[in-house]
Image (cartoon, rainbow, N blue to C red; front, side, top):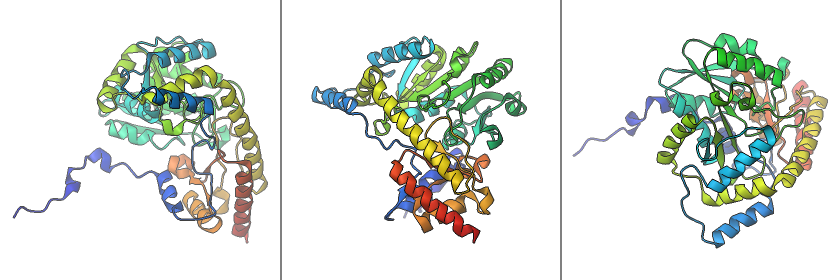
Length: 393
């Protein structure tokens, strides 16, 4: 008789060190509960605009179900080139400097794998999206955490960043507008960071998926700054701006060597992004501006409502200038972020995400997505107000 096997011994050490997603844990807790109001999902509550869906349907009716080029449909890359030149004066070659990916998540993964060698240090600015640190670890890199704080509206400064740079630092991962804080960067602060990047010969991975959801000021891509174009790979997608989350489509823009290296990984791990989604994305770029702006105006309306509501019930909340998240401070209640979120769910049936999921700098905060109807936001704030009042008794 052959001896039994313990499959766990075959699991890679890098994978063993990755914690489960704190966001997913709260989704699991909600399962089976009724009368739930969710501020936890980082997903638009809007349906993909009809004209985009119609083009996807039409492409299927025409039998467009084949593979595309590894790099993506030429028409889509051409459209991205025109869009970014029109918006920012950035001129990317559609043949060698743009890669279409299966969501921004894939773009992030292969960007990190394309530049990080085992032992390289990669600075991750937190609070940040949960995938950044695990992606660095799986690439064999060492995450170095730099924390932002509410006193600075969670914006990053060169003074905070500089001490984390060592001779082993290879790259920096940034996300502005930020998930989970809603923070944005001003151009002056970005110029200071660009100086550090150039002086220390570093590479920048800039996740700008919330670019179009900038409510105050104008979004400035890091790659548009002097000397930063070839030191930056810009990641973006269609999920947030055009409510196309389930279509799983992202893209990367950068120097030819970087994009080629990312494509080499992409061609073996993913091959190509779904053609149906790419057809829809072409329509979004060509004719989706009006619908996108309508959704952004509605998010802005909700932003003002929820921030005012949180401050009214005693949860101090910085004004998020981008994305669709509020990040209220709950540290004064005496509960940890996780305890507050779990009790709020169990007692008031409101789903939020504890801030510590996004790094230690998020402890004492909650991520609350206002990608929900005003009616749901109103009910959520009322329930949270009742919860806070009970904690004071």
